[in-house]
Each structure stands twice: as structure tokens, then as C-alpha cells.
Length: 338
Picture 1 (tube, rainbow, N blue to C red):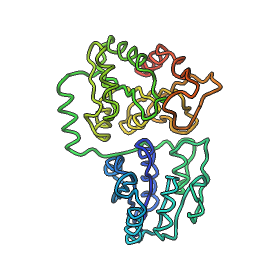
Picture 2 (cartoon, rainbow, N blue to C red; picture 1 turned 90 degrees about the vertical axis):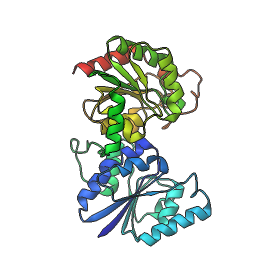
Picture 3 (cartoon, rainbow, N blue to C red; picture 1 turned 120 degrees about the vertical axis):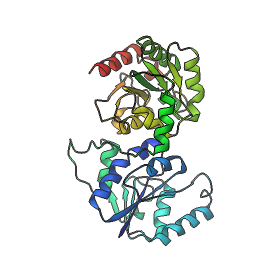
């Protein structure tokens, strides 16, 4: 059996956008085993993929951070004797791992650190979606229609039961999820504007689920504290896979340009993504199920970076402040009515 290793050690959103390539990699190599190398944070995403054989956790900020830890992990990779490595992550540390693995058939992007580690260098095209770029990496042919592959995961019985028990606390068929957080401050739409969005849809008899990770709990709680109607703070109470299952019960997700956008695609629901300091042209926009995006682009300073910043470099944050919450509400209502 051919042994394939796919490396993605970036954030949860990047992990979700790797799932279509992993699915097609298995489709192109049906008699192979496809393993994933990822960080501890994203292991549960790949564990839930029906196309993954085994998940290898590379703790680059913990036990594998040191040189000795890196060398030990590389030795474990060598012992597994992989036939092929595809690395969608482009860091220096990843390239060193690939080099030390001693695998002959390797694929990496043209903007990878020390790219000549890879036997096969694939052009990283900025004007493409991340899913398309990952398809390029594995050599999967697609066109304008066929690249839009839904990221797929399976839900365990434990996940289903936990979500169903939570939802049994209230009976409603009108739920909207709101994801106000992001690791990057300049990706976060202002709390006061989120408050207006939550209050509006709550007044229309929608149940609002505030979602996010543990780091988003206090932000969601502050929105909840000023809200009226049926609003629930689920941030930090559900894992990423559990949050995706929770989203399957919602009619719409409104999110910043962050990982929950991609969770919504896994959940097969419409997603409205708000772009503050970033732009959809970076290739991380929602592309399934009638999803849409909204962005205030009449600014010479936008984008100010591919990820974002801890604060606006010009101290005005106009990319968010000049994006009206009323316009977001209008688009969201159109999506709900379509």
C-alpha cells in the first residue's frame, strides 16, 4: 500500500480548507493510506475526516519545539517510510522536517521557506482560492465548477448527543449563529456593531447562538450581557467539531473572516463573512451553499496585511467602522429569504 503524508500545521481555518484536497488525494490514490501531520489544535478536525488514515500531531510550540524534539519527530517520520509527502504549509520548520524525513517524492509550494527541499515545486497562485491552491499541490484537475468541493467531516455519537442535549433546552426552528471573534484584532468587527446585529435578529424571534473558542468567551459574554431575547453564549463550551454539528441546526452563520466561516461550509449552511482589514482576494472566502461576503473596500490602506494586526496601523479602523451594521443586516435578511 502506498503511504502518503499530507502536512498542514497552520490554523483551524487552513485545516478545514485542506479537507477537499485530502478527499481528492484519496480519490486519486484509492489503494493508498493518507496520513495527516498537524498541530494539536487541529487534530480533532482531521480525526473526523472520513478520508484520513492516521493523524500525527506535531507539537511545535510544546514538546517538539526544541532542536532535539524536532529531530526526534523527524526520526519517527523516517521510520514510517512514506512514499510521498505533500506539504501545504510553507514554514521553515516544515521544510526542515520534510528534508529530514528522507522521503524522495515531495511536493511543496513555490513560496515555501527553503523551497528547494522539495523535489516537486508547485506554483502558489495568489489569485486563487486556498482550496484551488491545495488541488494544484496534489495535481488534481478542476474547472470553475468542480473546484467547489464541500469540506466533509463525520460526527461521532458523542458529538451528536452533546449537541442534541444542548438544543433540547429550547425548542426553535429559527436559529442564527454569530461568530464575533478572531485571533487578529483587526479582523474583528466591533462589538457594538455585533450588538446591533444580534438585537435586530433577536427582535425578529430568531434564537441567536454566539459561537467561538475559549478565547472568545468573554467577548461573547459581553454581547450577551446587553442582549434581549433568546441569545446563548456557546463560546468555549463546544469543541470545533461539536461547533460544526451545532451549526448544522442553524439557518445562517454571520462571521468575521476567520475559522468559523469554514466551519459553516462543513455544516452545509449559508455563511455571511465580514471582511474588516483583510480582503476575499486572499483566497479564504466562503464558496458553498449560497454564501456571501461583505466588505468596505473604498480605502487605500486596505488590506493592511494577510492575517491582520493587534490594532489598526493607522489608528482609525475605518475598514470596520465605516462598514454599516445595517448593510450587514440587509444582506443577512436577503440570504434568509432566498
